[in-house]
Length: 204
View 1 (cartoon, one colour):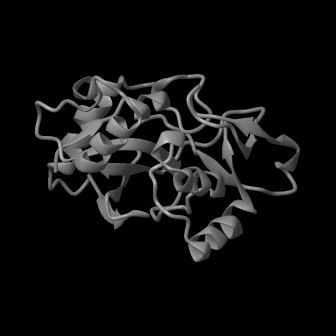
View 2 (cartoon, helix red, strand yellow):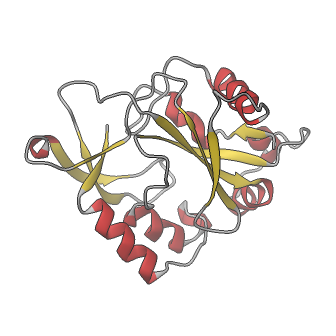
């Protein structure tokens, strides 16, 4: 399975990004290394496929080959003082949503795993078309044979998916034109998300 790094996921290579950052690889180098990992049977490359929140979404967990730090952390008495909250949007076209995050005084620990969130080619092209972006080819190389595009990279210490954040679920339910995927909010999954993010927060 060949994958591409979408323009949207390139925010992870910006030192000002508010979540998992990859600063020791360029986007192109990262994409090449991931495809090497997925195309090899070498035992040192341990990864697993998981089903995402919708039929078009897949998750791949691989060992962290970068210097990426943890993207989230459990809230404790020791780190509670560094917890912040506010409204933010991932780009100027989206509505700001309420979220919480850590602003730690020292760098977070290095993540053991990278969880890659993938959307299939059909969904990516659908989203870009519905958002009114004209140059779809530039966004997802229509000339190559990539089946999936990376839309997010999560630094984690566990190899299972952490629940999607409640604000992300809400944005998805608002639809593609509001920056979401158009997937309907499911009450049980939303409650599971709240249970997790009630005691965890992302790290900026």
